[in-house]
Image (cartoon, rainbow, N blue to C red; front, side):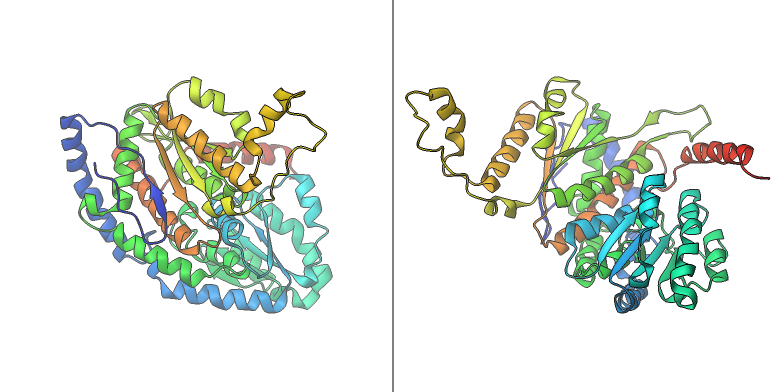
Length: 443
């Protein structure tokens, strides 16, 4: 399998493809033919994940609402869980500009909700996101906050809130309409594939992200990921290689971010891969087929060199590694001063030896050396390693990366024999929670 070509904005050092068995290679190529056809069809449909970057109506909707929010508020508060928040939070955290501050409330932890109760809604805007409109946690967030909105805003409530949901008749849509709150249509894609729709783009635009540039880069990558030839299709080639590593037992994906602003990229991918690939090939609850999937682990810079690295180097060889790195960090950082003159190299040689690597360095160069050293150590151990370089302000690079990873995940899912767009096992936990609430709640 050849490596995917470099994209114009995103510098990628891909996995080295595992050595194929001739029969396996022939089988993969044969199975890829209908998948490549399917990718082309999704590109032509504006409702599919590959068609989103070409949906001008979606972008116009984003600009209209971002302008409206900025005119009415100093900050944006977003209620939503999973795909309703992770995409937007990724874009804001990695790219946020000089716009509004954006706060994502993606849990119903009572302590977190107590903080929400302190918000001054006269200078804030509430955006509630739920595709189904029936997510219990988001409904609870919305219902518990509505009295505060009414108390502080009165008749101006509709100027400071909006709901994104599948259609006006969902539970969330009905509640919003009763209170006069506008409803924005959710696109016809699953939540974890909605980062490049109003779901992710609206919070990003409110924060000052250049969403036009983001979508333009995503569209270029979507065109590439719809090509019918495997060697010319970067997302499909990545998906095929990911599948081959999975077949060789590399079923844990460690996403190691060197740059704190990149943490949410790893968090977004964790949901994308876990919900798309972690399934039974025969369907949940049928008791047939194989259990397959890719278990995501997020690691943070030098912090997790001192907590996870021992496992990754000497533990089970079941891991593949993706590094996210901002190369501009090496040019930042304070200079590290030398030891005070009172410390003698002759009298305290151990101290001088410990500090010798830091002489003449900056914290930025130290950070880079740690990243390069860990990456090299893992590669030398025989683990599959790849790197995405995402520079600060790299709007185009992130737009391309989102499409690449979505395509990679869908292709790997198809090759594994699962539907990458559903999440049937999640429903069981939801139903159990509902039964507990109904059994203990008011009649």
